[in-house]
Length: 301
Ligand SMILES: O=C(O)[C@H](O)[C@@H](O)[C@H](O)[C@H](O)CO
Ligand SMILES: [Zn+2]
Image (cartoon, rainbow, N blue to C red; front, side, top):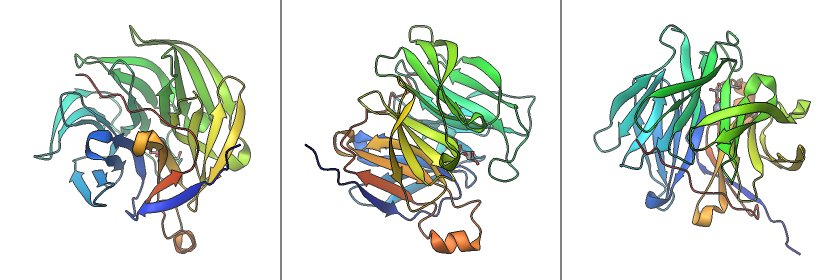
């Protein structure tokens, strides 16, 4: 029998307007993340506890590792390469050129090194935006872009099954976690279906990651929690509540990927909410979950 001793700790009081896209970088013992409206990519060193920040020229919605060094990020409607040393961003591709109010949102690299990311209309307030303006794309290693579908409200969490045969995806305002069959060789998706519908108190599904047992962890915006789902049975297995409401995304990291890191937002809280949740916008670490994650895949282009 194993005793559950879950511990939740705010490891960094960053006051992010909208923290997102946590990614563990094993080589530097660091957590990468972004603050979307602040246009910042951040790197928190878990050993020294120091943060480095790079400011870019548009809202930055996701960051990922790059095999050849540095990072890739989605900035505005551009896929960019980010050089950490000189803080420069080079555009690799642009999407949604005719949609001036759009920006990228969540993104993640697939097991073959393609960078998937979707778009959305810019919000006037959290979850308030022109609907069905977004699309899902991926940047291939040769820098060409493929579009999968349009009509997306808020393109959000994404990950792949352990056998790489399923792609999981969240369009937040559908209140559903969806699955597609995935062809790793070609990067093609097919056969969309829902694997979980959020309950009312779970609020809005946002970022997502998978664990080694193939279960999905979904951060619930306004729900102040991450939930663990079994995509095969459609059942929720676990709820872990956090002391902040606007939980946006999660990833595994730390020693052997046994810790979970959770980002959250400050934007959208009123003055009372800010007083009640002083750590809103910080980075949280959850230990004692008893399940590990997997290393992030690097972009191979
Ligand atoms: O973090 C994101 O993915 C979006 O950019 C946010 O704006 C929230 O998700 C949204 O407001 C709630 O759905
Ligand atoms: Zn998100």
